[in-house]
Length: 445
Image (tube, rainbow, N blue to C red; front, side, top):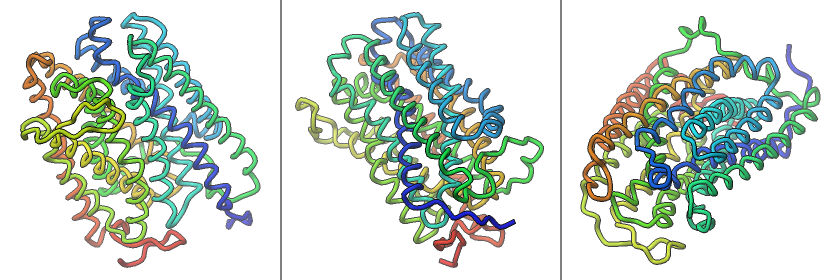
């Protein structure tokens, strides 16, 4: 039956985007708050690289377990309740991580963060897919990612604006707990917004996400699985690298913590501006699978470039006290930031073109579930490689095996994106290579 309710107004849609993005900002800040204190945990608490890798893996293991039932929870209680509850879990996780110097407690805090953070992302992603349609979809996804990446960049910038806190490992994590409280505020505001909209506007066939139905997985197309595979290798490459990036810049390239934090922030900072622009671009020119292939190709040489290319002249970044960054390192990080903008801006909304709306919750939950498997394994592997090669300021070459591992993953991303492009150019395509009209229907491009 056709709905007689009016669609959401433009004001309602953008308020939803704002509130959900505030929740995502806090979520990303809390996750990335661990990166700037890696060296302090190693010096103050005696943690090894492998132990720090396990802190990331604990997050992913919890996310894997929760994604099995997260769709059911969202389906049972609705997105407005789910986002708020998961944001509260993230707040509790941030506080637990900062509470004591005991490794087991910190590990439990990161595990609890995985319980709340990834299901929150699935719910938020599905909300955007239902409130935004047609030519606004990729732009809305891009803006949401931009605000989320601002949370990541802010965690890196905290080495500057909150530098007095970095006399120990604990105070920066208490700051992250305060930011998590801001995320809860955004989630509550979204709850109130959806509560007012229910029964008054048309939110599509369902205002909640559907649960993950394993018996229906065979019904997803090859294009969907290529996107899932690209998602796995892309995030398994970029996110673990970011987890070690500030420590790596300090130990392998001799940068101060403040400069290393500013340099690391360029990756999400580039995404803040470039992601919505890429979203606008693909909404208007199509070629989505081609853009994903181009991004994968651009990422392929970056990890080896940062390892083996000569440093080049030094460039002084703002707010770093005059500490110079090697030009090669700067170019690599900015390029990776653009790739970090392009692929997600195209990849996540592309699923909405391939999968029918009633199954979007299952599709996004499954995609995120697979993402977490790769993301859980890589930090342990890279941490073990760093320990095995005795990586550190006395042996910067010890970081090279990990960089080769990242490069191998990036090469797999290029393979999967090429297979997607080849499939979408053929008769079995789903419109990823076409332009989208305002009503959401693809037109030849």
